[in-house]
Length: 272
Image (cartoon, rainbow, N blue to C red; front, top):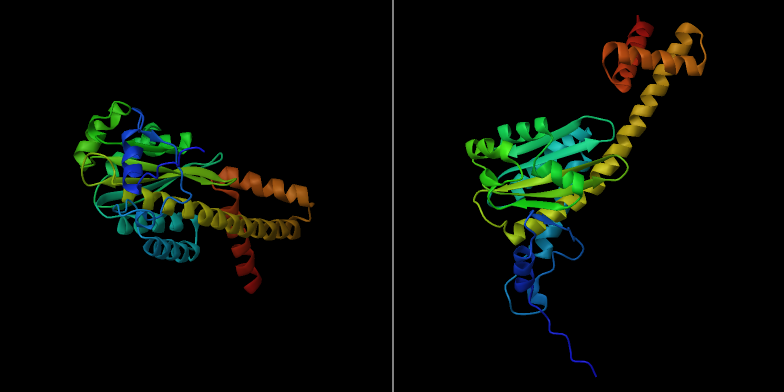
């Protein structure tokens, strides 16, 4: 008979997570079941949020994001919600990179604006690294981290001491990261990290749904604009789509914006 396996208290598991973090500061995320309380198994103190509290946070995040009018507004709400829900942080920022599109960012907190701008302009930093590698990226001393020397001065000026960047993977549309900046240097508090990972996991699903809704809305608007062009020019469907695309390129706008303006103009003309 084999010897029974010794059960490791959750507090030790949390400590082991931080001590075994590689030198490059990356952690392979494992969100499933990460919010369990250790008291369920032993008398050791919990290293994660209470399940009821976490469930409440996820519910509130769901309500706020699904009520957003656009994906951009949802990112703003995600950053603001995380900044308010995570104790001891001075900033939370969100970066999302769509396929073939520009980086979309949002942030909340009292510090870090220059740091984020420099990170995005140089395409290098903890948030972007987490997005590209799909791993949790941490730094215990951001102003001296050798991976991003170009960000040292901005981190010191903005008062950013440490960071944990959790990847966001919005299926079939974008990748990104939720970055959390604690108010002091050192390892990120395990409870804060667990909560941030749970929020990021929920946000992935919600942002994917919002992206799907926007795509449906954009498609309907484009179809209406094509109908207007066909009625005005007496052309075929393919030619109407080509006209719309050429107009968007000439004006330097995306196709959905041009479509919306065209439909609005046609409605005004029909009312006069």
